[in-house]
Length: 217
Image 1: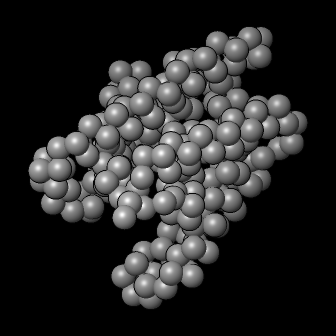
Image 2: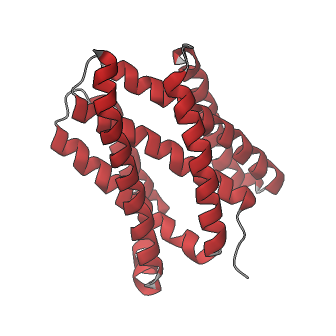
């Protein structure tokens, strides 16, 4: 019975995932074609964008059980658009071929780990706390390095750790979908699962880009 429910959830979830990524990359690329508008939107600074994303992430994480489907969809789309705004800079900073190559590599890694998370019988829930703590520490270190240390070697080390974290998070979040399928309706599980996997994909892509991306001359 549960496997049949998951068979119905997965197509919806990956459709939402694709839709969110499409919104982000299209809005980011489109905005990069209008530098004046892009600079005007980004002139407000990164803090407001981060606050919006953080609020949505908290709402999705803690209110998904009480949130209705329409609200969850709105939050997901708004998050994708907001991320697209910040992504617009990447299209000006990196060569298009580099962006496409890293996107392809990210997709391959994502597919492999998503398949592993779906098929493995291993209990991955015990890694949740470890992954979360490692992620928080890496974010704090990244902020300190950006404002204080400004060490390029430390920045690379943080990126490598982040790649490992989000790689494991892909498999972990696939297991979360299976667990939520027991208690939530299919549409909400699909949207929430897509949101978590979207975060994994985007963060993995950005970290790979930081290390292997080729910047424009």
